[in-house]
Figure 1: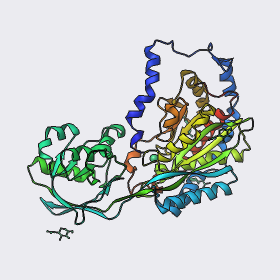
Figure 2 (figure 1 turned 180 degrees about the vertical axis):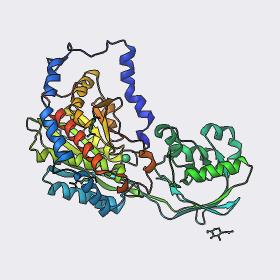
Figure 3 (figure 1 turned 30 degrees about the vertical axis):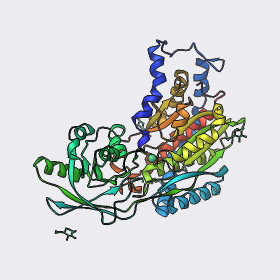
Length: 478
Ligand SMILES: *[C@@H]1O[C@H](CO)[C@@H](O)[C@H](O)[C@H]1NC(C)=O
Ligand SMILES: *[C@@H]1O[C@H](CO)[C@@H](O)[C@H](O)[C@H]1NC(C)=O
Ligand SMILES: *[C@@H]1O[C@H](CO)[C@@H](O)[C@H](O)[C@H]1NC(C)=O
Ligand SMILES: *[C@@H]1O[C@H](CO)[C@@H](O)[C@H](O)[C@H]1NC(C)=O
Ligand SMILES: [Zn+2]
């Protein structure tokens, strides 16, 4: 998950819902409205007729011969390839690997769609506190950061808790390294410091900026992520420090101690390079041109293994197709797995996919994304019309045997966002993700975060929702 998965677009998506409510439309609940010419009660019956199919999918994924297959696929992939940041050879290796295994798995229409992606290289980096004591800080440069001049920068640190405090103390920022020791509120809110911290500090003449890692929990782990420079504002190097070091420097500053850091950032921004979105399908038997899209992203940060973010989401999207293939289930519409590239730079691969395919937007039934971890599934988050929501509520009842029936608001995901903004119903996997940001974008994002049983359940949810929606007589109403 990247920065743009935050609150800004959420408010955009929820606007139509808000207007709907404000306009005083009656709540929809009962068996009176029409859907594709059928009264709702018939739709509930139609969905309920998938109970046996759903149970077969669940049995295969959770208890049958596909048990632990998502986990094993993900382990083989991430142990073999490791992490895979946009532009890197590892990402291209990852795409080749997945392309080959999708073909070996016998899926249909397996192909790559070329896109241009950012190419940022970390290089060597370090941060040494020289005052008030000698201490080596654990840091990670932030994606798209420029490097420091040769020899690094050595400067006094100005510690602030917020953009408001920075504004109040703007006269003090010139020539300093600004450190944001912002508390973790939520990812959507707190990530603003990662995205815009360097720019806000640069406007006041700072020479570099540091952020406290965006996480509610830390064992001295730095958490990287993309950041945005702003046109017309000088670019300054920027990195994250750990929660522990940020809090320590805040205590030092409160005691009036002078803090000096020597910072080296060896990062470089190279010209955009070639990459690919990876696609596999089960072609629809009746309406092959109509699509249910199911997705996760193959790229990751250049730390850890990218197992949780988002190897798990990519692999369950693949596994959903494998499960249906094993059961000989071919839905009315095409089920298309898209494994995105360069999500972490702001949904770059997905944005180009949207531009290329939006000509067929009326044929996109539902877009699905898993990018908040594959922990124990609770259900899905959904964005769409009230009528579509009413149908999805019935679909989720099929997941009663594994207790994953929740239908929440706000389908989310950087990569499906363009479709949802254009009015296509969207769903994201909702799991027990309380620990997600503990590992996010850090060296802690490894296979050890993953649990085979939880992944089985995720794959069952993903396959069931995708299959049933792709097989209903009518597309979801917009
Ligand atoms: C799947 O993983 C669980 C948890 O590690 C284990 O108990 C079970 O035996 C595994 N099943 C198979 C078929 O390997
Ligand atoms: C500070 O620590 C670094 C790294 O351990 C070391 O290279 C350097 O000599 C130390 N400087 C002082 C002044 O102790
Ligand atoms: C749009 O849909 C048609 C019909 O399925 C297909 O032939 C065409 O390739 C699609 N175009 C794009 C850009 O996806
Ligand atoms: C679902 O919940 C029931 C009742 O709490 C429990 O017995 C069952 O084991 C749960 N199933 C799964 C797959 O978690
Ligand atoms: Zn992600």
